[in-house]
Length: 438
Image 1 (spheres, rainbow, N blue to C red):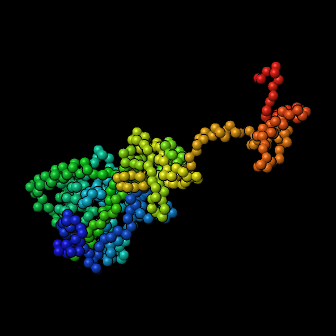
Image 2 (image 1 turned 90 degrees about the vertical axis):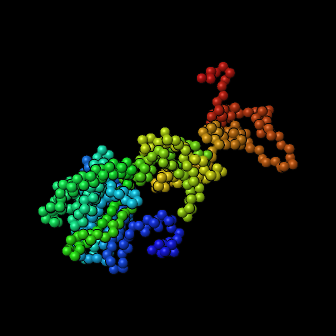
Image 3 (image 1 turned 180 degrees about the vertical axis):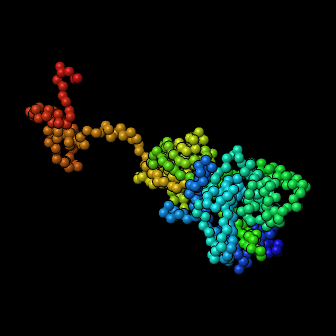
């Protein structure tokens, strides 16, 4: 076996090869039944519920689920038809997975587990009403201890049905379980009871250790299938399969990123403009506002908004300053995109459009305000004063630049009435020497 891995998988790390060799995996043959996942659950967008919120808030959707067409996690027992049972539980995202404190709720669930037993020609099952119930921190150790005891009890009683084995651990339940298989128990004497109590204390210490490292915002579904043995008891188990991680939407470090609203969707190419952004829960030390452009799916430019930890308000608002655009000499507005980015898992929010505008030298438009209401050119000013437009002179001729203005002060008689009327129409007012200017 080691020679096979040395030749076929020589590029694998030695520790990974050692792990594979020590797992004693039973790879299914061509005609042997095995359990497989046809539809994985959706990793993000589902919120774990507390027991006070009730049990039914919609099932866990599948990865391809949409609003108009909902789908759910689906498994199949391949190469098999007949009587079988499927058990679903929650495990951690660690490798190897451990029992998780959260519970499954919904139809056909009990004690945090899903169990169904049926006879089918084609063993494909979709889990439509499966929800995840969040356990509070104060009950964390107790719940973990009970589940670890359930696992230990299942190893003690391999003949017991899975749904009967996963019950609350106590001495009476263990006696009843043995009695259900072997009749009135005579082997369960006092030394055996002490041994179980010692194991119970060890499992409690293990629960305390697990509670310190468990991630309450991420779980995986563990699917187990049981087939009948020679005596038609469902004790023949197939290798379990595990789903992709499912993250709690309410968790700031694992939920789905989303920009809810932004105060401004444009900025100058110089950047450094203040923008307010509202979003779903984020962690202030693991979030970035990314501006970017892309062509054919490849990012051609990116910049990041500037903000500090104090600029992230209540995990749902960010106040940042826009980064400068790469090309400050643009003549027309340029469309880019902006999105949130989480560094821990390299997750992104859906991108929204953003516009960079050319640089404006007269930011407050003072020049435009000064020119407002004035004649457009000198000809209009002269025409309003009743001065005829002079014909163009040849380039060789010498023309005084004040020739037209000199005409106003010539000795020819002037029509002051017409000039005053023209000046009034142009917005110019003349005052007499003794007239008040108020």
